Image (cartoon, rainbow over all chains, first blue to last red; front, side, top):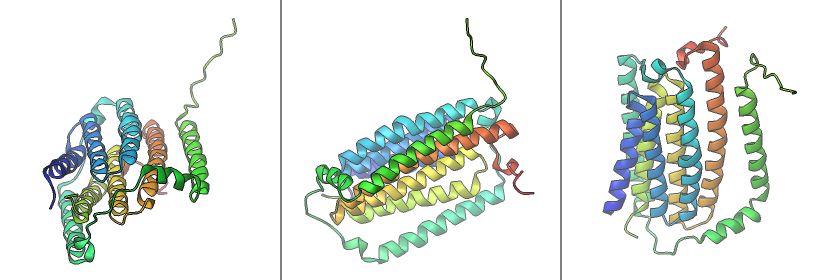
Length: 170
Length: 101
């Protein structure tokens, strides 16, 4: 059975996920998204994987959420608060969500996952480092190249071509 | 440990449902990016949970890769949104239709 910390974390995570999508202001929405990401980091701590939790905090809460916040601030003020959606589409979306949750949930409850428990000790994070440098090293290098390429691509895409900076020579 | 695998999987299913709702209903590009982030986090939670209960180090390794790739995806997605905002002065995806012909 789940304990109190787990229940509190799941309430925080799911509640702020809903708030991130439903709050009127995009700025509050992105702060609520930070709550979701932090809650997931808490789940990682509960699952005895502190290394992934710290990585999640550093990458998601530390950089991605801040990046989203700055992008929201670049957008015009009235667009941040404007909310366009039609009612019918919203009801269909909620119905789709409930169908997904109920169908997947019932399939999972019927499957053998329910009986899986473990008493074995958690995986040591040293073995993750060993994995990275032995079995997964091509993937690690490929990931570094992908990160470099995507950040360069993002910078090139977001550059303004109509503004020319005059270089001062004097 | 007192938490079982099924609890984590159910939270992950709930997050997936919320993400699907956001992707299908919202027309704001940044909100759709939020929904994608929520879905990716649900997947990461599954990876780490199954890796803990097997137990195997592959779950955490794959979760780390997934987080890094998600960071790249967000950077490119946000810059695309900025470019589209500069072209249309709007972030409503119903307005981004110059590829539609």
